[in-house]
Length: 98
Image 1 (spheres, rainbow, N blue to C red):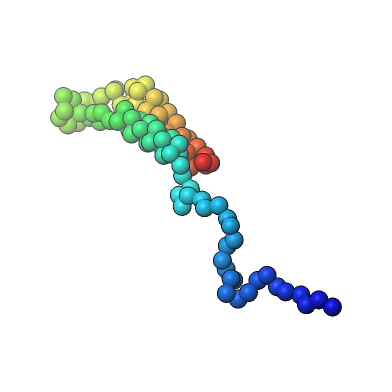
Image 2: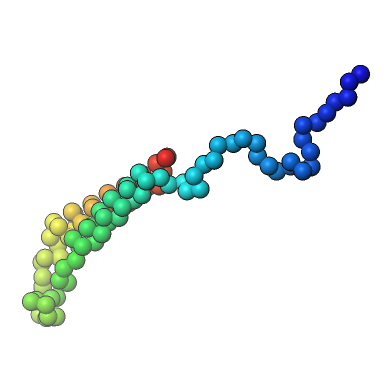
């Protein structure tokens, strides 16, 4: 009878054998590029939402006037669309594999 030898020992327990080294970061350069693009869309969307409020005329508060500019297409349609597109791009950037 031949004696069985075990390849494993207590000294080698927990040590990996010949595994390729992976980058310590999950995100690669493409992920960061998409994240910056998404962030830019979000910032542009919030900048497009800015403007005078409902009771502002020439930069001063006037309770007797009404500014219909708060209902402009830019502020209620285009700007939120930019923000939503930005968040979708951020989700894609997070889920994209290297």
